[in-house]
Image 1 (cartoon, rainbow, N blue to C red):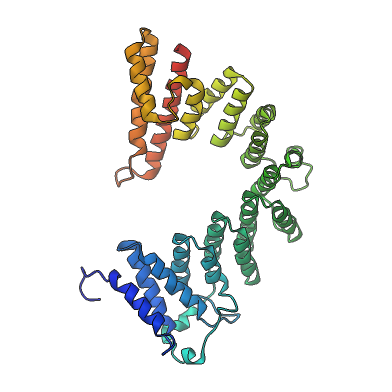
Image 2: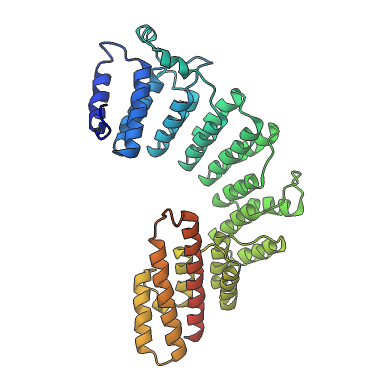
Length: 403
């Protein structure tokens, strides 16, 4: 690689194909594949995203052709880059291979290759850091592959993964099984945590409630929540937002609006503030019960508490508040309706409210399209977006009252 400005990414595909085509003629040192994996991943970041596929091929070859012994590990560079490749390529199985090693079928290592390992390959032997387990398991859970995540956790437990890490990762995988609706594995893992002395968290109970709920077993979901409320389950864990949210979603699924509103009141009794999900459930439940005042009160309480809001929250509420002026949730069309209302109405209160709403919706759209910069980071932009959508909902409520 000569000179700063020479792009070499276009040569990588040729180089990878050349090396793969030479495997039968002579063994390729693992150090070569490691260097090429690093080079292609760097190129993918800074030059061409297409090179992620090449980096993936190099990483997979590195896994498939290393000798696997009980004490052999990938070094930190390969672990970090390999997990990044797995994340970009959405390949949880690659993450499993990086942490646990390849399958027995893939774990082949010919004698001639052993004789060609360069000194750098000796660095392949290293303990896997706990955070690598966390990253790999998170990736598998996000990909809805909790079985792969459990394989990684089992590997970590056999290799002395610190207790605090394993305890939290058990909970994460439990949530993963619940999210895909696997009630059987959720219950099994829940019981396994108890038998292995793992400390359950409130999120673990929320996962169990969720698993029962999406499998149509609302009675059992309520039984778990009631036990937490009464403190009769023996774990001394009280329900928090996650547990209440899981049950409210279950009640919404069967359109039991009274139960949604009942549990919302119980949650308030615990002093827990509603999340955006609970808020939307309460609004829908009030609408379902024909309680207009209750729906508007819930909206105003959410605004007063500075609850996080976005375009979807606004659409849900505005379609109820001013249905005649909402065009399939399209904000631009809603603004046109507001301008038309300003022109057509003779009521000054309606005119002023429509003008105000049109203006704030314009600000919302502009802020939604804004990107982070050095002068304004993503957190500041997100808070400003939430503030504007809260104001938009407040102005919509006002318009609905004067119409």
